[in-house]
Length: 263
Image 1 (cartoon, rainbow, N blue to C red):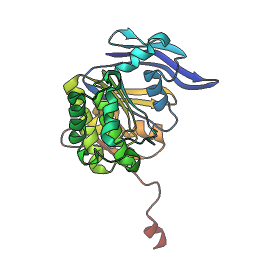
Image 2: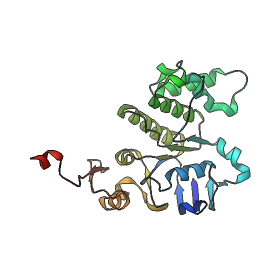
Image 3: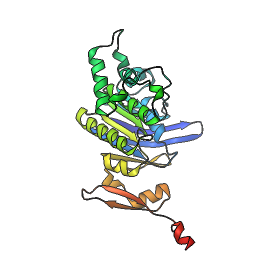
Image 4: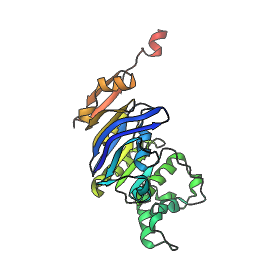
């Protein structure tokens, strides 16, 4: 379990997150949603130890995160930040293998190489294995980085907008693989998504942030409502439910289509 207690993050006079309390269970995918500037990325950075806690505490399976424990803390985390530069003279396969950097020796083992190839195959990007990573598209690099994170075999997965550069097919592949492996491996997975329908489709629990505070937490079917979304985003929406009871969001136009105005 990941326990976040009374977490507050500040930079100077700016409060990024205020008084956050959460308990996130193993084997579940938790998706953070909310408008821009509400502390989503700041929360992930704090959980990785990149942003110091102003107040509160974080525990992973009972072990507290402290400034002195950060190196060992990070070894158990698969972290994929939003903006990652890959100006490296390495192949995609070599970048994936770096996911096991902590255990690599002077000689690459067959086990490490095989695991990297399996990760690429699982994400349907094995054909990129020998390509220099700096020649890949933004979406291809994103998939390669996700494969690298998978190879870390983490206790905690932190993914900041992991599908932002992906087409529809690869969005589904990444999210389906993340959901499946989270359940199978008992990971605690936390991802930031802007697509509310994608979040509703794959999240076990939604973490809804607004103005740096927790606005709602729970299963998508219980959390997502037109009132909540309008309150957070100031956009009129309808929230419907499919045959399985899962919600999906349809935005409403504030003005009639242009052709009607020209009629």
